[in-house]
Structures are given as structure tokens and as C-alpha cells.
Length: 425
Image (cartoon, rainbow, N blue to C red; front, side, top):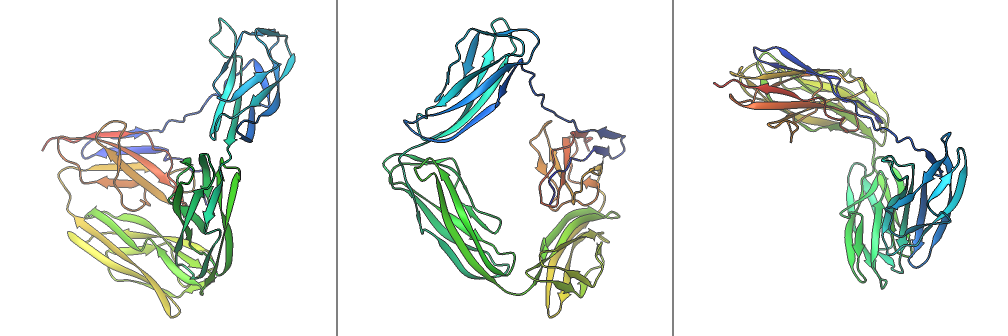
């Protein structure tokens, strides 16, 4: 897993017969306002409060400056919230503190976020700010059908889904604030926030995709504005099967590659449930090659091994191959494809410095307007730090950006934009 990775540090563009253009991505940082007044706490979370009822929290406001400050007014943008015990105008001496209360009285069954800003007349800069949030609860009720889901026995590596229905059985609207499952038990087909009128229902899917052998249990957790604020729907299943080997992606298409050049892609072998030994591998075409993988190879349960597949076309036209691995009496394979093309009249060569973070490759994007929109050019993650765009047309302007890809599949921010003007034929 990768928790943080950066975009490529430098993107270079070479137009055939032209000089290189070098771009550096900008770093954007958000400045935190320096307030004269410090609120403790700086934000108040009121949680869930029934409509027609209230909840009150206390906050202290301290003048952190060496001179007195005068609060001339308080700007509010928080429906259902009010300040008690603080009248304006108010002058607060240096280092002095005033305590007061904020009360939340929800108007309806909605989540509310906002705040209060303290201002001084004649000053464009606020003196301080307090954030507030809360959710109103109504007398609505959510009912699940079925009340629990048992997926039964599921072979390892096979996904199963079941339907689940939520119904508002109360007399007022209910807003579903959030819905979620887990890593191997998850849901789809429901988007929060969602409001159900009395008697209305929503049907969605519960998914089970096991990653190891044995019993599995979990819950679907529904957070709503109903009286039963958190609804938990138990999920269970039992996973059967021995260790299995899989390869991802199972189909790799390198697209068009210039003769005399190569294109690389990252593939991954994975073992599920139990340890596996990969005894041997084979590749049916010399135009494709594998690197970064030494056989025999043992993978523990849940372990993965990434390696590189390279396509080097030897002649013009389509090429294909079958990459296979054997483990005991079983095996796994992937289909490889690509096309060799002769050098075209116009092309754009891209190169960039590798990311400082640990990444598995890069995605290239191209647009015909500055700033996008961009369209991804590579169909598989680019393992190298170069790319040749052979699909340009004479007389056109193109704009390029590149993004790094972590092992989780998450992309970094785009690099700086590079542009290329293609000469007319």
C-alpha cells in the first residue's frame, strides 16, 4: 500500500527535430489564517440531535494579541446554530478570555456544517472563526430487508452479490447520511446523502469477494437521520478452496510501438488463500520479454510479485503472445498483444524524471486545449519514463501531462503541462 506519492518531478517533451522543453510541477500549499482571537475548541461537533430538541456546548475565546481587540459583530452561516452569552460590541483585553455557549437546534433531518466569524468594523481581516457541525434526527425509522445476509459457501476468488432493501417505515422523511461495508464485504448502488419519504424504499447490492479461506463476517453500516441513527446489517460467509495463483492484468495490449523501440508494462502475480510455488513460465513470442522475475518463486498467502513485460516489435503489423506460469498441476496465463509500426512523418517524444515516491509506473494524458480536458493515451501503466506519441497530426497543437501511479492504482496530481505544435505536412 502507498499512503503518499508525488507526481513526476520533471516532464520533458521532444518534438521531432526540435529542442527539449522542461517543466516542473508547481507545489500548492494552503495558508492558515492568523487570527487575533483563538477559539478553544476551534470547531464544535454537536453530533446527532433530534428535531425540536437542542444541544449546547461551551467555547472559550482568547485574545492572543498584545493589544485589546473589539468584536463589533458576528457573522453566522450555520442554520440551526446560535450563540448565547456573548453580546457585541465587545472589547477583549490583551490575553483575556471570554466564555460563551453555542446551541444547536436542528430545523430538519439534515447534516449542517457552518461556522461563526468574529469581525471588527473597519477591518477586512476577520478576528477569529469557530466551525460547527451537527445532524438533525427525525422520528423516521429505517428497516432492512433482509435483516442479515449469509453468502453461504463461496469458492476462493469468486465474487458473490445479494440485494438489500432499506425502507422508511416512519411518518417523516429520513436522510441516509452514509453507507459502507468493508474490504471483502462491501456495497454498491446507493449514494449518500439520499432522502427517503415515508414508505419509500431503496434497493442496493451487497458484495462478497473473499481473499482467504475460512469464515468471514462483517456488517453493512447505515448512518441516517432516523431515530435508529446507525443501522447495522450483519453479513457472513464461508470461503472454501486451496491456494490459487492469479495474474493481473490478464490481457495486455501495448498498442502501436515504433520499430526499433520498446514499450514496457507492469504485471502482477498474486497468491490467495495459501502459499504457492511457481515452478516455471513460458512466452510464445520473441517480440515480448519478461524481466524482474526469477523462477521458481514461492509466494505466501496474500503475497504479490510485480514484474515487467516488454514489447519490442521486430516487424510492422500486429503481434500477439501467450505468457504462462505453472504451479504444480495448475497454471495461469495472460494474453499479450501489440502492433509494430514504421516511423511516421511526425511524432512527439515525452520523457520525465522518475517520481521520488515508490510508484509502479506512469499514465500519460493529452489534450488539444491548454489546461485540458485530457485523454489518457496509454492503455496500461507505463513502467518507463519515456513515451512516444505517434498519433499526432500535422498542423495541430497538443498539450501533455503525466501522472505517477502507486501500487494501489491511485494517481498523483498532473505534472506541469508541455505543449507541441506539429508542422503542417
